[in-house]
Image (cartoon, rainbow, N blue to C red; front, top):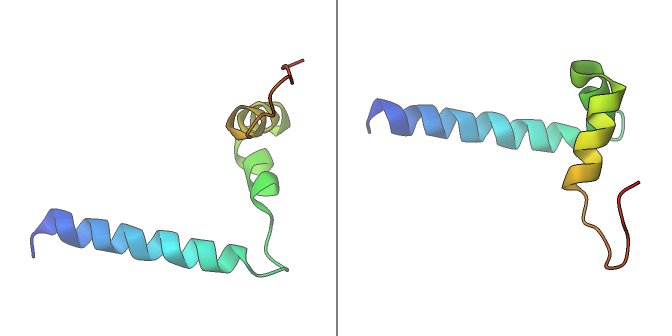
Length: 60
């Protein structure tokens, strides 16, 4: 196994662990973590941009 594959596997394990931790009802929600890391305004814009939009709905 080469170094790149090992790094990728470790990254995958970290991502899986983070996902499983997020399922804990006591865990800090993703939106709250975004607010802490990016600030509330940028977090709101990011969540809005990534959210699926229904047809006929426009951005404000």
